[in-house]
Length: 245
Image (tube, rainbow, N blue to C red; front, side):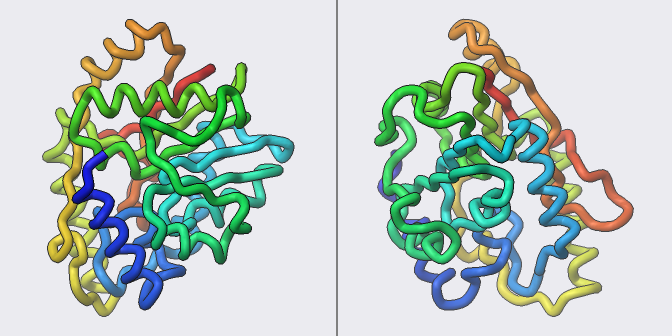
């Protein structure tokens, strides 16, 4: 895990505590511009996409790996019996404590998760693996996360950028900003101020790894982070990976 990446998220966590602790930027830095606020319809759509992908039940336990400031934790709590959040940033976890009891938050790293085998019914890692540029680390991280899931459970790794469709993403982002400029009083672009790496995934290479490891899997279209009235709720330039135990 990159030390620079840890420092970046620690810095973002401290910024959130001052200004944005209950806003959607805690979901992801990638599309963050001050002044853009997600409507409840969009939040509900994102949440339902995750719930459907994992087929969550009220009796389930769920681990959110890379929970950040707890924004998704907050959305998913009503759908499960117990939810545990893990992040490598103490400042992010400090923000998450307002959404989840402290004993359900854990500081730890993907690749060496502090859980035993088959602890949770399901797992989630959303807007997380796009931070990891190294293919070997991605593969180790997927195996590490999957081992914590019980037999019959699922791990949803969401919002993975498709390398072959990156130009479609760039166009969609530009159109979304035009839309927002007409409806919000926009401030600073935090992506430009504090840029982090973004991995572009080769689907064939990823599929080959999963087949070699004999992991049952499904590729699904991701929730559209640029959703607004008149556009599709899911996109083809990002995908969700569902691993089945």
